[in-house]
Length: 397
Image 1 (spheres, rainbow, N blue to C red):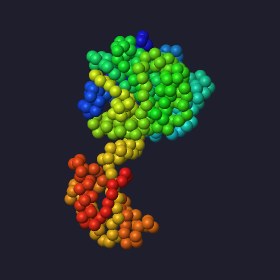
Image 2: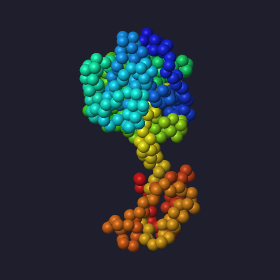
Image 3: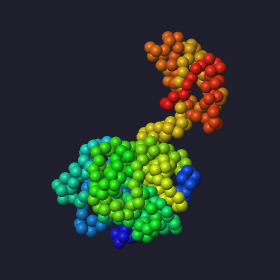
Image 4: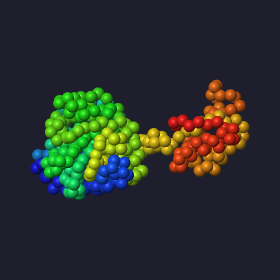
């Protein structure tokens, strides 16, 4: 607690807003607030821990810092190193999203791509730190990093008088360890629940088995929390402070990113959206005042486009009309004319003339459309097309 109080007193880092979401409140029948760390400097909470740790270690004469990161901690360390004029070497997994690599380099750090996962990148970073006698700033298993993340807990309790639940993303455990340390010390009745991707359930398994468990898979859209092994320090804190850890699927995360973008006007990366994913998927049952930590917003724009598209398909708001149309001039225009007349927006049209299963005088047509809001609208569209002799059916794009 002393370390967290000291970190809170240092300032510099943004105090991020606590925003009430009417949409999430209606979905959960609770009062849901979003702690928007996606609006933090460098786009995630990680800069809090990096700033606190480096500020502490610089007093020991540190001039070169090294770390391993899937992206957000890298940016935090690079940003703080630039403020202090330190040399920074960052090791990132080879398949880290490009936006995170590019942003880290913009802060002046040397970026090395090594390994298929954070775990492999970390091993290489430790070797570099030893070779150059540099200070390793661990992404989560460092008391000063944990203390920096814990300042979020202070802000939550200062901004909301009564807090019944705090839902927090979990990777290596630094964020939730810091937050839980504060929450449980000041408001022990508040439940603190962690959320992980079901593809990388390292904390979930560790807490249930009573020991640190390593997992092999890191294939998830929530790359920021795709950690094979949680920390030893964070494990001890989590086992003594958390009420539960739950798992969400990548599809749950996709739905959460879409809801945050559309309803809250907040762009969240996969890891940043898992707390909301747990709420809207029903993986946690809540009541009263609930805070969901949106931990980061550093998502590649091309990935965001894919995620939003998949989310719309999953919700049935994008569908594909598939059918055969006589391969004659004007036939396709008749089909699209019906759609336009009935207010259906066309997103994409694809022709397939050379399918050997289709008669030579016909073409197979796939039309991706936005689903009209009126109930039964698509059935009416199919009926109108049928009256004109066009047999279409609905499929997933």
